[in-house]
Image (tube, rainbow, N blue to C red; front, side, top):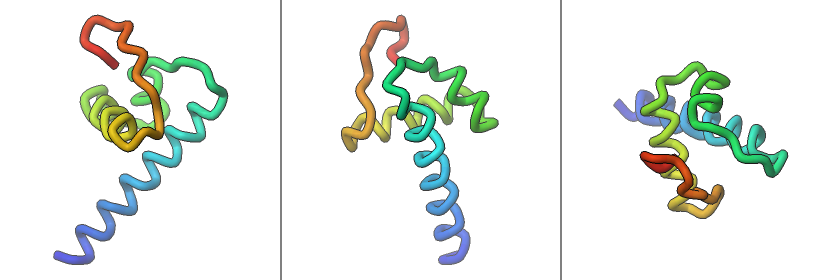
Amino acid sequence: MKRKITTKLQEWKEQYDIILKLLADAEWHKTAEIASKLGLKGTRAREIMRELCVIDKVVDNGKTKGKM
């Protein structure tokens, strides 16, 4: 069980790192674009983006209808 959790945490860290590298250009990116780059569903990409907002790694501009 511990190995499974460690593997999952490593996967999440890799996803966060990829997103932060993508966003390093200081441009706004759509969640669909981020999901596509990571090979994820939009819901998982939105979840990651929310998590990154909570820890102040990214800023949500709130301009879209469903936010993010």
